[in-house]
Length: 475
Image 1 (tube, rainbow, N blue to C red):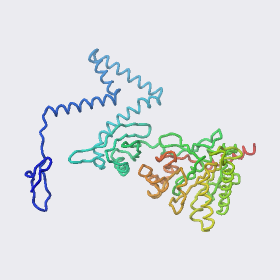
Image 2: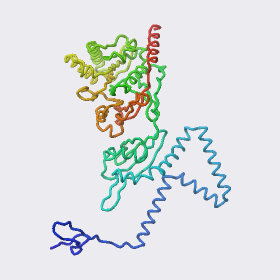
Image 3: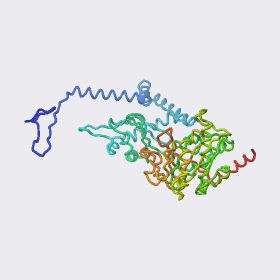
Image 4: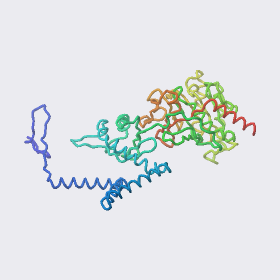
């Protein structure tokens, strides 16, 4: 009644009692000792070759010292070692940057690999559920290499066949805690390979004072702060639109005023005009002289100013049609940047329905047609929900400061941004620690970048106004 089964026979059934699972006794194949030794020898040789290929310097140093010791005795080997150490120390003191790039970060990467990641890799993979056990055999994601720089460790990982990026983004907290860091970010390098970023320090922990006003007029990108890796943060404003979202006190004003500060020389030269909509009468009113009459606070005046911007845009489009496809700022056709603070008050909370629809239509028109003719929009708001700002997807570049809820992160930066490490809801509410800190997602790069904008104080704004009016009177 039983059929012959692969690897076993029906007579080897342990139990055939009804309503119980059928259990097979596994077939055991005796492997000859010679084959086992060959397998282990092959594994040892392949591991040795891989080690020599991946770490040639680390392997060459002890081999060379051992050869000197055997051939000429230990005094010569110790002397050579001492000279090498002294040369490295001198290099580190004289040319610190080149030493860190060529030697220092590589040594740190090797140390972190051996003391942290290799040591805890199997345990973290097992506990986090990223390793798999199938038919009694363990499958482990492979740690390819570790790279270090001044603020973070970057781990290249080869995923298991069949794993998805979401399997890793769902476990970023497990990975961060398992390797002793505060956060982990996941980025896809190519098919099957991931980059895990573990920050070791926070270059954005301290507030950044206002940056110097540029000497040369330029429409951007304008430097407004610093990125998490220590590089300058430069924000593109010409040829794009920028949406800024953040809770009260998160530092939205820093991004607005840093942008104005970076464009100030171009404003003095007549290459840029900044039009300001300030329904709160608090943020942008402090420097209204900079806007040369293009300032509005009353909702009706804001609607008129937006309609005027649409009119400028449409006239330029008619003149540029068939002649040029992009805008080059000139005195005759300057770049127009429309700043809107608390845009939600104009598009959602405005009680006058007709006025609200008029403002929303003008903003949508500017956001869809303005950037190719030199009219950009930078809008700031607190509540990023769709019913509050239904045109948020028309802004190519988005900035998320401190937000109240985790769901709001994806509303601002796009689906999956929080899973990739944009923890805007975890930014500290303490002013000194979190004001101006944000995650930025640009049109040219889908990965969110952690940044901090410089703080422009009231005295800095007064200095900007005085400088602008002084040059204007001189002209």
